[in-house]
Amino acid sequence: MFDKFKSKIKNYFSNGPKAAFVMSLIVMGLLVTIFNMKKEITLVIDGKESKIATYKGTVQGALHDNKIVLGPKDKVDLGVNEKIKKGDQIHIKRAVDVNVEVDGEVLSILTSEDNIESMLNSEGISLEEEDRVSPSLESPIEEGLNIDITRVKKIGRASCRERVFA
Image (cartoon, rainbow, N blue to C red; front, side, top):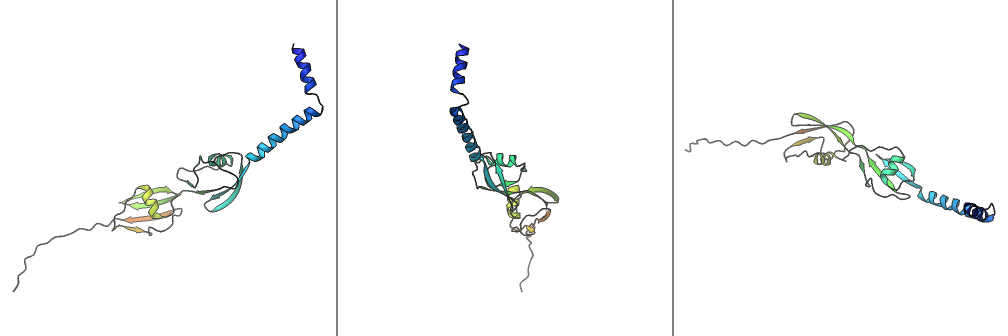
C-alpha cells in the first residue's frame, strides 16, 4: 500500500512542468507576503528624524526590532500597542532629569513634559497663588534644569490701638 502511494506521489510530483509551476506559485506567494509585511516608518526622537524598517505590526515591536528602549517616563505619541502601517511617524520625547528645590529639599525628577507648569502638575507639586517659581512656569524643560519654588505665606496681623480724638 505504501509503495502504491509512493509511486502515485512520484508520478504526480515529477520534475515536469506541473511541479515547477506549483513551486513557483509557492515561492511567489511567500515573497509577496514577506514584502507586504515590511513597513518603513519614520521615527522622530527628540526632534531627530530617522527611517526604520520593520516586519512587526505594533509600535512596541518596531522599537524592539530596532533596539530602541523606552525609559519609564519617555513619551510616545502613539500607544506602544497600537498597530502601525507603512509611512507612519512615531514621535518619542525622552525624559530628562531636573532638580526642583521646594520646601527646603531638592527633588531630582525625571520628566518628559514640555514646560515647568505641566511638569509640576504631573508630579503633584501644587502651587499657591503667591508662590514664586524660577524660572517661569512657561519655561521649557531641559536636561539639568534647576527650578526653585519659593513658598510665600501672608500673615495677617490685627492690632488694637486706642486713639484719642481731640
